[in-house]
Amino acid sequence: MSTTERTGLDPQRLAKIDDHLLRRYIQPKKIAGALTLVARRGELAYLSPVGFMDLEREKPMREDTIFRIYSMTKPITSVAIMMLWEEGHWQLTDPVDRFIPKWRNLAVYQAGMHPNYLTTPVERRMQMRDLLTHQSGLTYSIMNRTNVDAAYRQTGIGGTVIGAGDAPHPGTLADMVERLADIPLEFSPGTKWNYSVSTDVLAHIVEVISNQRFDQFLRERIFDPLGMVDTGFSVPADKVDRFAANYGRGAEKRLVLVDDPMTSSYLQQPSFLSGGGGLVSTARDYWRFCQMLLNGGELDGHRILGRKTIELMTMNHLPDGKDLTELSVTAYSEIASEGVGFGLGFAVTLDPTLTGGGSKGEYYWGGAASTIFWIDPTEDLIVIFLTQLMPSGTFNFRGQLKQLICSAFIG
Image 1 (spheres, rainbow, N blue to C red):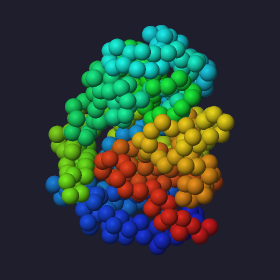
Image 2: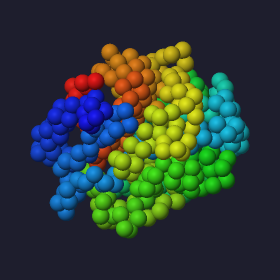
Image 3: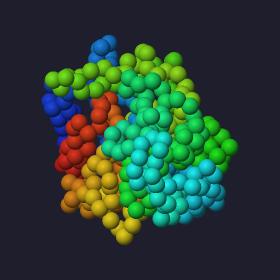
Image 4: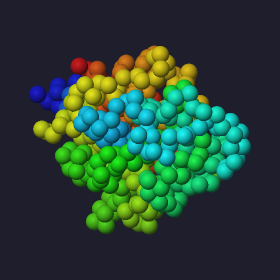
């Protein structure tokens, strides 16, 4: 059988992806370059680099280019904590303060500014499920929305985006959790949805339960078994030549270099091992992670999770089957919210007529530098799109790629 027969995807139609990216984005210099991977039925159907990984040095994009994947780290962290769930270490309804005792008296913000607040008691204690679904009441300093996220900025909680020209995050995961104990929540856990440092807190809890550093746990339990050889919290010296430059959109919509791969903070191992956004990876590495999920938790004889666990993670866990339009307190996230629910670490498509196509049950996420991935179990499909442009909402790459890939289905 040919690759076309095995994947059921027309390669000539998939080739329109590059035409689209070159014409719409690379030739007008809206992005430097991109790498798109499409896999179906366990087979690689499309892997194509276009443009440049480093404009300043005129280095072409490569199939093995290393990218900052930012929030695409979150699904990996979610898998890590669920591995410990499978071992019986915790329950979805366990209070978070079981693992972080100083959080026993968290309260909800009413008024005031750091460090003087007026608060009210929580309706119920924060649960582990709340961290996985971003219903914890935590936030991000980059929201610039409330006095709570202002307190995050003042205390250095989640205040930097490594690889975007900022200095590395100070301290460790434990230090962040310690500072969070003194800042009120945005809302009572379980009542609303807000993109937040919740996944960084989960990384800390992985350390507490496993008695290992988070990077060591990921290496031993996920990366090595899956053969993810280029994924980690830093870029080794012998791989710097494959590390992409990172860009922002400056004045007059021109590309501005925000992180030079030759001087990037990613060249050093960080003390803050961000489970919410700290990893670098490649298209092939992330494909192996996604293929493990699509296979029901196993790849090449290595079982990471059980099939039923992945089914649980990719269900909508928002209360009463609601979507994010009904629960989200902010528009800042990697996703559109209409017709989208949220599972244990992933956005989940509830209604494709509202999300612009795809399949019900598709799950996905993205990263701050416009990287995206999705997994469609109905079609046995994986799509990974990697580029380096901040912020992530600048262009609707996911929507456009869905249209282009939809046209390629022939079986």
